[in-house]
Length: 121
Image (spheres, rainbow, N blue to C red):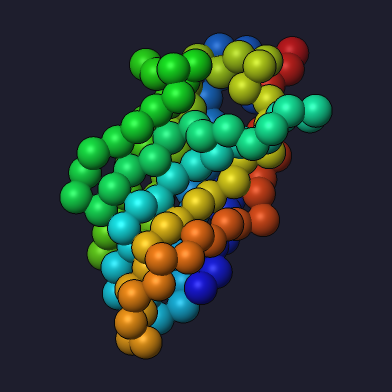
């Protein structure tokens, strides 16, 4: 199983970016997909996650600004980030937990390599 992220880059405060992540590897279903981030000198933190059947969870710091969405048929997850702030600067990681493949179900957690988001004038 591999997770490939795209969409990071530089944005001005108040601007927008969209991150995308595609899971590959003969995947039949993914229970939870989402995004975490790690700013310099800080621990990795949850940004937003969404279960296969719909419930979402957002960090308080991004509620009302970020929107997570999934395409279960394509095993993709996206993060629309609006009203960006300098404190959103971090490496953003795609995360997937609970994956069913042709070999069966695995409760393992998978991570992408990360994509850098920089919010600055």
